[in-house]
Length: 173
Image: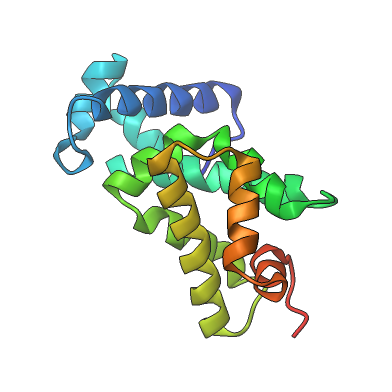
């Protein structure tokens, strides 16, 4: 998997490619999109694409990874981390919607990458990844509930211990 570049020009290219892919996704399913489609949409060369990404799926994977890392950094110190989870992801709902409709495993795989670093229990990792990705996918599809409504709904469905495990940065079990 590629990653967000540190070079300003490369980052701009990556954003441009991502935006181009989002435009194409309005017309065509992800499975049918080629690097050539993106190159034409963005008016870039194939070599520019491959300097930044390994393949078409990688564009979404890299972007979701970038936003997930930012979420993990920003959630530290938040007094209500469950509410913050929904407030953060509502800003990126369009990306979550695209991924959940086209290639939902990107969400699970990204969450799992970061949870493996903090949790040793593979069952706990799988449960956490499944719940978080399901919440994001369902919520992005419904587009009805506010972050506050999602916080209340989640608290109604899950007990506080489950919520603490979902939002914890390190294992304390």
